[in-house]
Image (cartoon, rainbow, N blue to C red; front, side, top):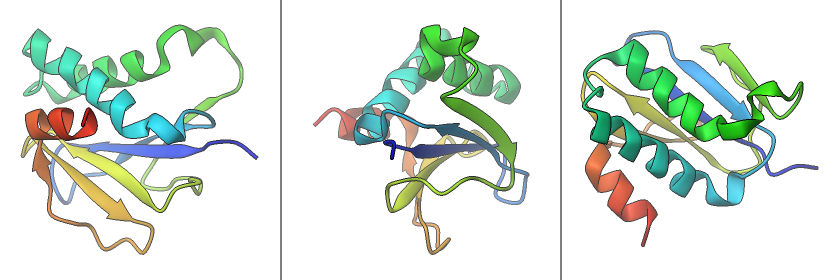
Length: 120
C-alpha cells in the first residue's frame, strides 16, 4: 500500500485533463501542489498552459525523474488515489478545483488562495 494521489491539469472545463499520479506523498499533496504552483506564479507562466503544466509537474516530481516507478501520466483517466479527492488545476480560469471521487467537481479557488490555504 502506498500513499497515492492524483492531480489533474487542463486548460478549460471541456478540455482533456492530464493526470499526474504519484505513488507517494498523498498525505501532503496539497502542500506539494501549492509549492509547485507558487513556482509557476513566480515565473509568470500561469497563462502559458503547456509551460505552466510542465513546470508544475517538474516541481512535483523533483529529483525522481530518473526513477522507473513512483509517477505516471495519463489523459482523462487516472488510477485510484488513496484519498477521497483529486485536485484539478484549470489554467484557463486560474482555479484549483477539488473533485471528490464521485466526480462531482466542487467550485474552484484561485491559485494564490489555494497556495495560502494549503499552508495553513
